Image (cartoon, rainbow, N blue to C red; front, side, top):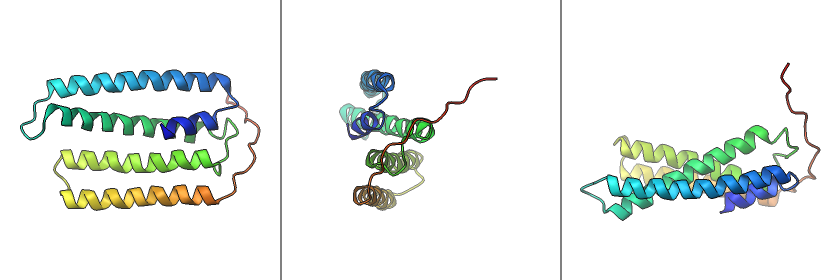
Length: 155
């Protein structure tokens, strides 16, 4: 929910984008829950209960959504007059950084590339890095929002 709030704060002056964001988040939530339920029912792991599989899949879906929203914010921030020093931008970057690392760790765990201890240490370092990003943005002064940039036009 924090990434959703950051998205709404960053794109607050743009009513159409905010409405689109609300719609996308709602459908992403429904789709995420549906995929997690289907995967939990269809996947039979001898090690884990189906509900544990569903929670893991839901967690991966949330991380993918967070990474997608952060990429969207990074790509369109300049066009929309969003400063990189805004607190909401820092919150989104912190979540995105942690989400990318966690998705990589989940992929490494699924491929038996890293041990549980290594995954725990890297996950802890990534989370602490996200906390430092959030702390940096919380202590910094948030600049005034600039005007929207010019969007590229087809020739």
